[in-house]
Image (tube, rainbow, N blue to C red; front, side, top):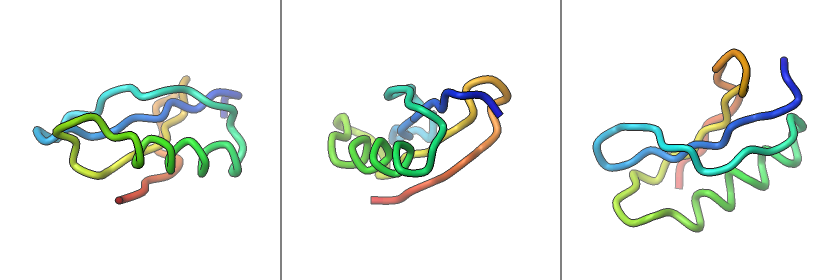
Amino acid sequence: MTELVRIEVQNQFGEWRPFTTCANNPSSIKLQLRIALKSQRAGTSGKARAVDAKSGALIDLQYA
């Protein structure tokens, strides 16, 4: 596991778009996922995920 996690939001077409990066610890990931869901860009599906920046492995997934 790397030290960085990529936070992504899903658009209405099912494509994952980058939102931000954060530290790889549970509190940072939870906070950034919540922020991503609250500040959704128009046309997003209400889903946000955290993926390992290096390997691309899914770490967490949240729905609005």
